[in-house]
Image 1 (spheres, rainbow, N blue to C red):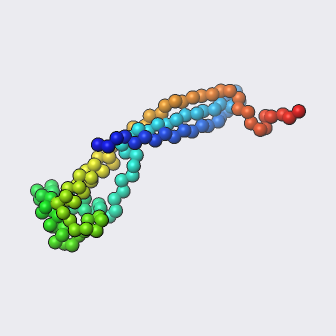
Image 2 (image 1 turned 90 degrees about the vertical axis):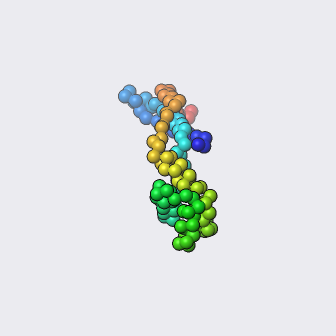
Amino acid sequence: MSSNNYSTVTKSLSREDYSGRKVNLLFDINITEKNLNNYFYSEHQQYLYDTIKELHGKGLGYKKISNWFNERNIKTPRGSKFKHNSVYSILKKGKIREERLNTESKWKIEKVKVLTEPVISSMNLVTV
């Protein structure tokens, strides 16, 4: 499998606590996951994957499946004639896609900082 993808979101919020003091919340959300990318298939790609999976499940080899598509003038996603390695590639990548889509992401929140110092705002400044 490929290496993990990383995403970090930093967010800060300012709220009043029970005594009316401003409290600043600063937190980072670090997501380390293989499933951060979107894996959208066009209708044609989905049809090809489903058909190859079905035919392969019935015992047909890659060469016979490529011949099946070529006899029906069905092209690869890039518009070429099918070869056995095209069938293998679509099946392999489709299985990886299914695995990734069916894996639940694990989120981890790190570095939560709560600052209770007063926040200086332009309304609190007094000019002399």
